[in-house]
Amino acid sequence: MLQICLSKTKEMMILNKPASMMMITHSLVSPRKNPNIEFSIVAKSMAAKPKRSMSAFEARLTLVFALASQASSLSQRLLMDLVSETAKYIIPKRSEPRNLEEALMAVPDLETVKFKVLSRTDNYEIREVEAYFIAEVMMPGKTGFDFSGASRSFNILAEYLFGKNTTKEKMEMTTPVLTRKTQTDGGKMEMTTPVIKRKLEDQEKWQMSFVMPSKYGADLPLPKDPSVRIKDVPRKLVAVVAFSGFVNDEEVKQRESNLRDALKSDRQFQVKEGALVEVAQYNPPFTLPFTRRNEIALEVEKKKE
Image 1 (cartoon, rainbow, N blue to C red):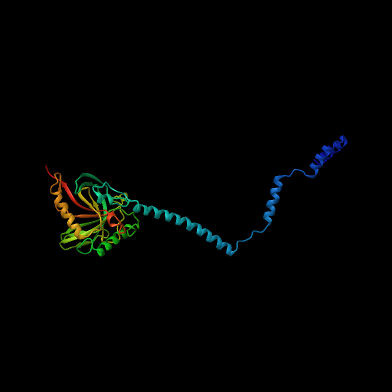
Image 2 (cartoon, one colour):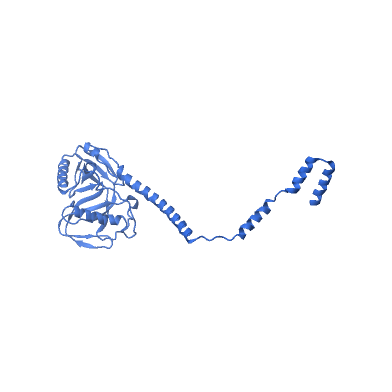
């Protein structure tokens, strides 16, 4: 190759063309570089350099940054979950009101019992309620709305709902919280897991219930606390009166009496024999009294023609 180049140079010199001589000289002085050779040289040079090990300080710093990044990501997810859950209470659902009192009421945007309104009057409405499951516990004491007994019962049910069960399943909160009067007859009552039979005196007692998320159906996790009972509530007809404020035993008694009196003049429905009052509370404790929604319900049936 070099011989050919020199030969060409000689011929060009004979022709005495300075421009050509400049081109040839540049060609000889700055030959075209081979990229493959350059890459090989750089690679060898890098391989020859000893790799610098990370210092203990740098390792700790890297770990701190990695943990900070993870914590930031987790915090964002937790914040979004918190915002989502809070929004259910801050931006509640509102039902079709019958009066000004009901217009001010609001319920959290949580899963609730499904029903269809069959008829409405100025005093109450008749609903056809679909079947659902509840977790219930017998309340201590003779009243249904003393703070101590209600708090204790609520906490037992909340523990079951949020993981104190055989599968450690954390279930979503629903509405409403139900409190109902039950007549005990001294018979034996079966409880869930383990099976316990308890003998009770003949007296009126109160039970508190949580409505279970519908996605579980009958496959609900079993409670670890033997005082919690899982129950299937069949489809039923109920007469319902809504009211605001905080619930107490005297008000429940008065409203139940008023509802029974109003139903006596209903042409289609009558109170079912043996029906006991049930109270539904839809709101958390921090809700303002005039925006709280509570309901009194009595099971009814169609009158025979």
